[in-house]
Length: 370
Image 1 (cartoon, rainbow, N blue to C red):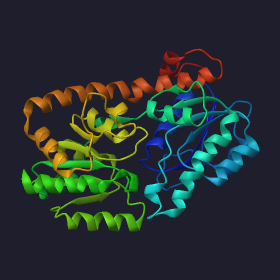
Image 2: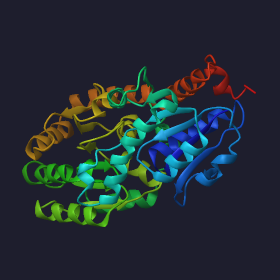
Image 3: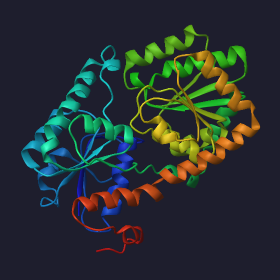
Image 4: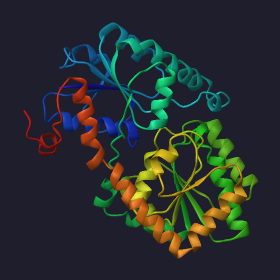
């Protein structure tokens, strides 16, 4: 059928989960493999290393390349081995926020956009996971970009038992209410905005409010700066939890009363969909692809740099029952529109369409196509 390539595969990573779901669906149609240059421990089984790409089973068909950052080894392998690509663009973050904390990563991000331009002539079909991403591809000279949401497996959290240990841990915080953020500690996520907003929420409205922040600390200097900032604004008892299991995350969503992300740049933002699917109201910045993802289901802030405004909105969402009821209903409906049950068949059909094949949504869902 089709093979895929991601730059890096990591547990909990949205792009990795997306590619694994696509691979498993494509296997209903024939052999399909997923390759990566970097493979972190704990990644779902069956992800092959980039060095094996030359022996991929579908050499006669285009390679599906998930673009998210520049990488010399990946570019070299593609240029040596692949003349025919299907591009799935998840977004490449702007380099500027990384220059201070991770200059090598900033270089990779700059090179990533250059690589997109360099590979353009090999791409037979370009797919963007949001309209925001599609606009970026058009600026780079791509024509006829398809917009297909990624395939977030957000409902997996409804199928696990929330961790009793995490529920007990949350109870020990005496959080009333609990504000939840799920994001990797990366500069463009602007975690300091959320810390400042919750600090004002505590100081002006709800002293017992607490912030729980789930996410891997990728760069020590940036993590140190975030923690220092939290202390400087007087944020009380922040809970920095790092990487958690699905059972622990389900417990956090169960107890959270609002989900907040004030990121500056997102190509889609899967945690927003997770929160909406589990009935947690969303407050987010009106930046990049976030408005595309949230739609009318959450409250979007035009000025996420103003912690007083952000705190006021959080307070309103937390204390207005009618508003909460409306947001929960709209959020669940929006998450259903974007969940893998809806979006995965669309992605598979877009990939098959690049091969000139018609829709096989029903057959893929039943696993009956050989």
